[in-house]
Amino acid sequence: MFQDFSPAAERNKAPILAALEPLLESAREVLEIGAGSGQHACHFAAALPWLRWQASEHPAGVVALAVNLAGAHIPLPAPLALDVRLKTWPVTAVDAVYAANVVHCMPWPAVEALFAGVARVLRAGGPLLLYGPFNRDGRFTSEGNLRLDAWARGLDPDFGLRDLAELEALAARVGLALCENLALPANNQLLVWRHASTQKTGR
Ligand SMILES: C[S@@+](CC[C@H](N)C(=O)[O-])C[C@H]1O[C@@H](n2cnc3c(N)ncnc32)[C@H](O)[C@@H]1O
Image (tube, rainbow, N blue to C red):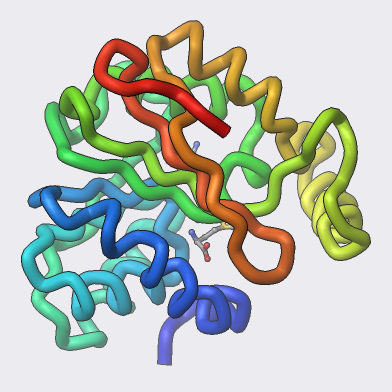
């Protein structure tokens, strides 16, 4: 059993995988940020065997993640300690970046650092795949998301659901653009960002 087992990650892993698979057909190395329990890493690495799925986690959680990944008996590289706020990341170039339920669980300056870091390490044409609940035009898209926002702010008043327009403005400052916005179950979305220089954008 995974330490910090997440029932939500168990529920959402199948629909996320179905959305990810066509987006990662030509990728080789994927960096996952804030991998948490590692349930997504294990599920996706097993289902997408052409990928090198490099999970990472904040240094405070990386040992528990390493234990989970080792116990899963799936050929996965050891997870990296990565605090997105660091100027230097432990990877220099990847084909894709995946982060689930992360940007509402960190303060806004860390979200800014995440986008800046991804812009540095993501190869031209590759996707940043951001899964989770997001607000639209300053509004929650469901009662459940409103409750999730209250839960996150209870952990830290600087956490909370992020607005799509604010993320787009932030992404533009580091040269990333929203290319696809896929609706997933339970009012979650998979946002696909790419270097603006390499893609047409669309919502
Ligand atoms: C709600 S959990 C999501 C875990 C997992 N991705 C999932 O969907 O089940 C948020 C994650 O963001 C990570 N996180 C928060 N701040 C971070 C930072 N500065 N750098 C890297 N990861 C961070 C936490 O450690 C945690 O694993």
